[in-house]
Image 1 (cartoon, rainbow, N blue to C red):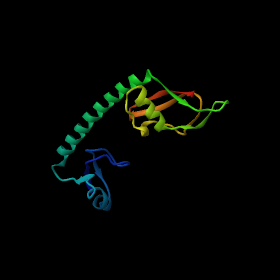
Image 2 (spheres, helix red, strand yellow):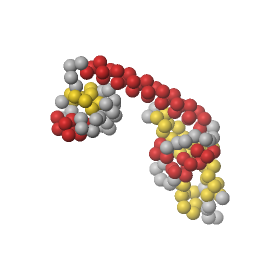
Image 3 (cartoon, rainbow, N blue to C red):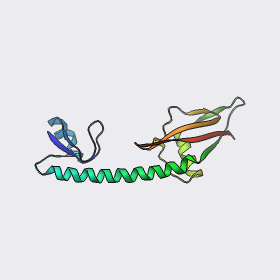
Image 4 (tube, rainbow, N blue to C red):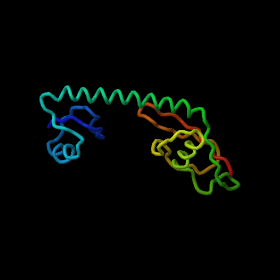
Amino acid sequence: MKIVLRADVPNLGKRGDICDVADGYARNFLLPKGRAIAASSGIAQQAATMRRARETKDAHDRQLAEGVARSLVQHVIRLPMRAGPEGKLFGSVTTTNIAEAIAEQAGIEIDRHRLQLDEPIKALGTHQVPLRLHPEVEFPVTVEIVKA
């Protein structure tokens, strides 16, 4: 069945894409949830309009992300934490702690899910934490963990 996506669907496509999917997937999931509409004879123009709107929004979001990246790369985010004599923290630093520190010190609200921290930080020192604000904009944020 041919459909036009009304929203981004993981592993299928983005808004405005014309896709060919199984009938049951379209009838039971995509159409009832409003994520797609059935493709008809005049749908190509509507799909093109959706793609243009998506591309315009994507370009705007990328430009905003690049602006935030330029301002955040200059900052060193300092987090005071309690630590033992060997420099091992009592507890750990998570993405939530880093996001709150960025909001407090740089004045920029960041969604904690955008920080790409594999495991919590458990030692004093300077750490590079990747931040992905947009699929095309990823940069490191310098986080310095200091003894409180």
